[in-house]
Length: 164
Image 1: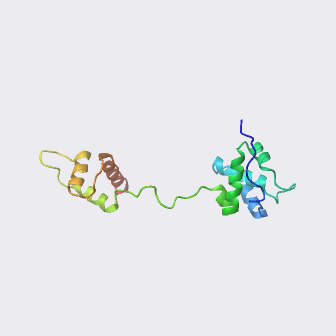
Image 2 (image 1 turned 90 degrees about the vertical axis):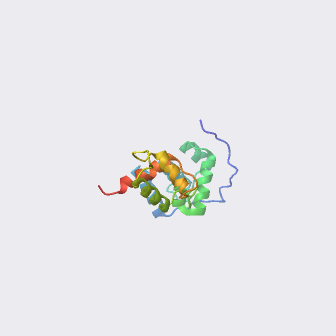
């Protein structure tokens, strides 16, 4: 089922030596069952790789991989993350510092679109459509380009946050 190939990793590079408190924290995380499956699996890997574990030293990567039903490289990655960031870093996911793309619509643009939607519609129209609002926002140079869907999201956000 899982590959049982040897890892190119030398176990002495990233030894796992958990304190009693860290072991207790990892066991609590596993027993509560409220964390993600990934976090629980990584906690189990750390406990199995711990050189201070009850019953004797750490297990070999291949043995841990077979017991946990993961690839040997997963064990290596968890050990490496533990060596670099501690047990919490080895279990949790990295937080992205900034979003991949900065938001195109700022609060100022949102305010202008909302104000525009509250104004009188163009002549010959009884109300604003999302397409008309998007086109007018570009005409008035509030923003370079905007879709009717983005206008809808801006207006929807406004109705969700405004008092009734």
